[in-house]
Amino acid sequence: MLLFIRHGERADMVDNPDERKKVLLKFDPPLTEKGEYQARITGQQLRKELEEFTKQKQIAFQDLSINFISSPFLRCIQTAAILMKQIPNNSNLYIQDEIGELMYSHSFKQNILMQLHINTLQHPILTNDYIDGILITREKFIKTKLIQPIYPEEYDQCQLRVGKFLQELLTHMNSLQNKNNTIYICVTHQGVVSLTLKIQNVKSPYQVGHCGLSSFILEDNGLIKNYYKGESIWY
Image (cartoon, rainbow, N blue to C red; front, side):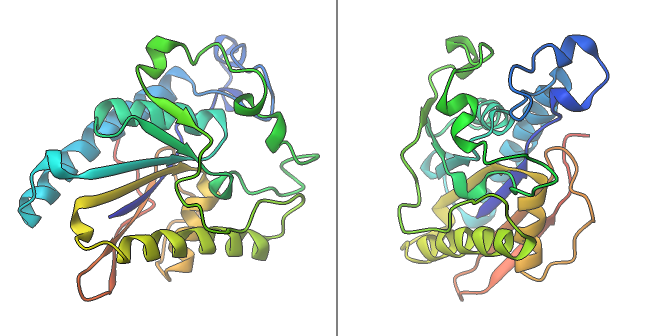
């Protein structure tokens, strides 16, 4: 099973001055308290659904291999860390630039990837208690040559980047002897979640809400089954 999840609500997009004070880098804002809540409830719901999935496939939950991958943006790393607390399985959180924000010129004035908190000054919100034993690693989970974000990006370039990453994950999954035991959870952005659905020719909402998901299950016959189409499950 392969899941792409949009991050929770971001602190620079609300009117609350206390939330906006958390923003130290305007291009790399943290989550709001509501965003953390959205991630926590999403994790709890996903845990229940994964438990049901294992029952259907007659697998023990503890035998699952759950791999967490995140965009390098702070709000995604926070969302992933919260999900990992609700779905304890693997302490490694892999960072992949390939599922980072779409680098449109109307969103950014320059390429800011190397200026993000993960590459410069760690945001004070990521305390040891917050991370709680999670190892955030710049080692990539998918190590094959992938298309890197560039600035500025056009829509077609974004689609190629996300499409290549999705293809490599599906190829990796297909190489496994027992696909049902392996789960990939990728925490990313609205545009990336939408593109995963478009690439798989799945009709989806124009906007994917906070913590909205896309999901793909690779069946034993090689067919890809889609379940989530951008919905949020924290309501």
